[in-house]
Image (cartoon, rainbow, N blue to C red; front, side, top):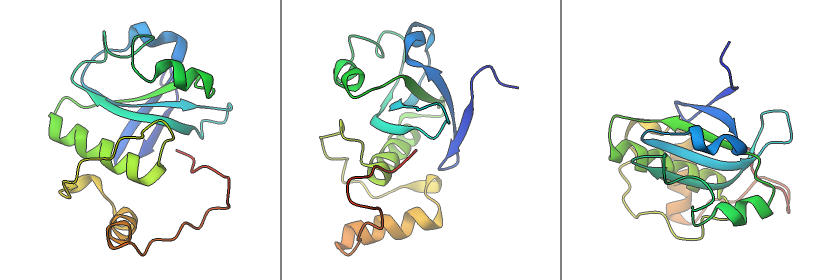
Length: 145
């Protein structure tokens, strides 16, 4: 059994790490600052990617304090050493799929999603690009990660 719970999203495995352990995080990764009510079905607050978590994630991060105010108690981490483009692709897919409230800047316009997008995601992304996607979630609810 892993020391921290692991969830799989979009062909990537994310470890759910308590936010208080941010000093232990290192490596090239896609990360999600999130709220976990205890059932490991987390609500994403911010999605990002970095070449090196160490020195980047933590109280000096631009969105850290805002995430704490919104209830952040975990950081979901997917270590991705295979390159920046894979990290950016996964970050883009997660941002477009979950629309985290602290990701106010638009995602890059590049549409080369590679192997990180499954059939369901392709339909949603295509509909978003064509302007014909309508949310099926209840008004006022958030998508869960």
